[in-house]
Length: 323
Ligand SMILES: Nc1ncnc2c1ncn2[C@@H]1O[C@H](COP(=O)(O)OP(=O)(O)OP(=O)(O)O)[C@@H](O)[C@H]1O
Image (cartoon, rainbow, N blue to C red; front, side, top):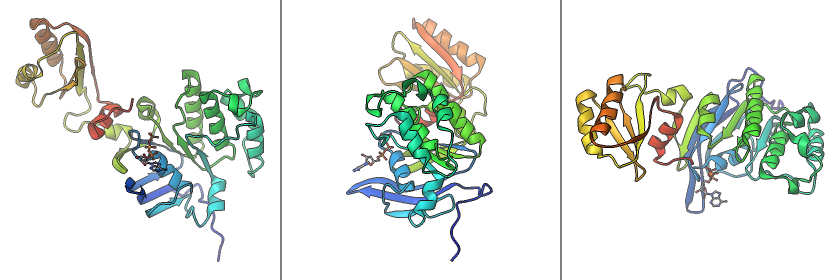
């Protein structure tokens, strides 16, 4: 029987998950997840806490068994071809799994020896700012510093597919930028990057494909542009967000707006004096809201006009905020 080989660059799908289900006792964590990731693309998996993101990744890298469905990694079955798959896949999990008593460069050098064509340890350490704390053991590093070492460890073997579970969580802005630059470089060199994140703006700006998972199923997927497009209103501004010092009578404002635009929906963030008007936004509508507030003695503290963001879509779909 011919030896299986890790996919060639021409293979269009690096990761193919179909109908993945998994329960922990009575608790259904994954209820039929379908997800694909391609080389040269950043695939972001978004979802509220407990949605099933980490479980999905852990099943893909063989750390967890699953109940039903299929996973193909680099064209191979990750259970039957564990060795081949491991050589081509990099993983950074939330709890790191780094040896606490070792120093960062020792860990990376040790790991690099396991691969045929590893990255240069010093260069990678430099790129992620690890050289600033090489004298300390992993135990003595801050959360963000450990995070960077874990990312370097995931990338040291030049994987074709990387799984990064919240790679930018807990990082200061400078480190976050460095991490995203590195992730973009991976994309440029045809690596398939699968990452989870709670940073919606990062995902919207940098991901090629987004999956939103809630309660163990994919509730939406597409490019950020596809997900944030508002077919009903076109791509022009689709909302006005405003905040006021005193509460607004939503019903009365809606009555006023219905004369101007149809449909106009006024949404209130519970108890926060923050409102959102959805619909095709025109200069006349902005002026009408400001004028109505003035007439009712309501002082606006902010008013912005924009297109809906990935975070707005996320909220609409899951009814929850990521932060
Ligand atoms: N070992 C376990 N035993 C029992 N339940 C578990 C276990 N691991 C995860 N779960 C449950 O499975 C569900 C999915 O968890 P998972 O960690 O995959 O979510 P997540 O989307 O990664 O969340 P987060 O954003 O908080 O990291 C949650 O309800 C969680 O409580």
